[in-house]
Length: 205
Image 1 (cartoon, rainbow, N blue to C red):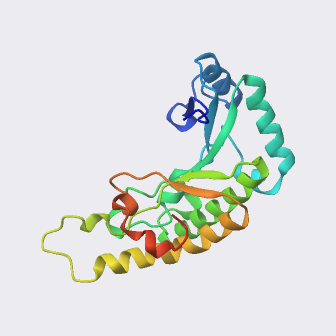
Image 2 (cartoon, rainbow, N blue to C red):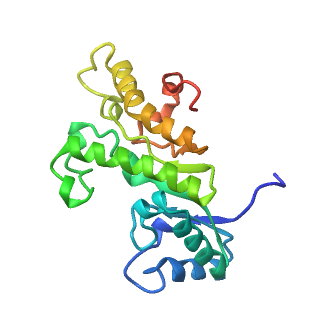
Image 3 (tube, rainbow, N blue to C red):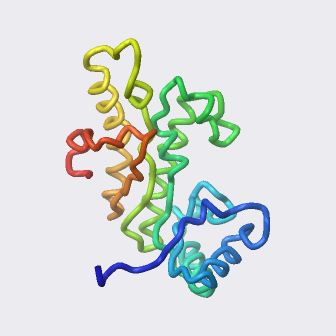
């Protein structure tokens, strides 16, 4: 327990168009003044980060790290909760989860491809920041069938978890190549909630 750092806080829950949460720098300063030591950066929010630029440029990442440090905090993780959720969207939830950029809305296939690419960029960006952990959601293909009536067909949950593994394995490979561990936020609404699919992901647990 003596090695635990912090406290840190997730900026996504605060960012808005209102001062001081309208820019990364001012939000970091506010958090430092409130006693926080670190911030988790939402890669979905352009007020905080340009993910594509972070994936391509270590200099840009160093600048952003410097901005945080000058404000009095450090960047602890990058987050792709929003994009991770869109890696696996059950058709029943298609409309509710269609919050991707306008160019891929109303197009589940394009939206999924966009989300997967976002995760892969986040792996490279994490490496450029020198961060070896990453926070995300898994998405959900099986969740609508947790307590259905009539009963779900035999084998459906296994099929859903296998498809989840098929979608995430290439993403996890990119994180592995970049030396970054993926940390799934587990709660109801995510297929990994009960922990059962860990075998489907092999060593990625």
